[in-house]
Image 1: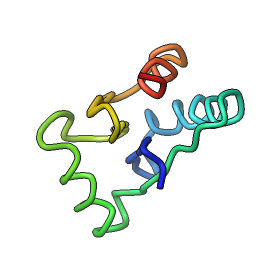
Image 2 (image 1 turned 120 degrees about the horizontal axis):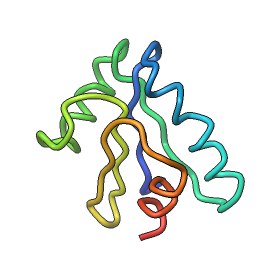
Image 3 (image 1 turned 135 degrees about the vertical axis):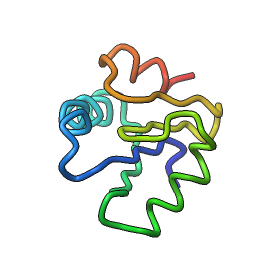
Length: 86
């Protein structure tokens, strides 16, 4: 299982903006990001609440289970790469 988690909404414009950055991260570094759509999937929404614990309260929400680090909302490629490689 990947230690990098992405929680997103299918129609979320902010999520759509970071999607290519996550794909670039996977391609350039070889890491895998597990993605969970939360607006149309109650099980994924409940999973997000387990990890969110009030940190963000919305999407996109990125969580690194190894470092307990998270990113809320849009982020630059550099921020995402730093979050993934801690």
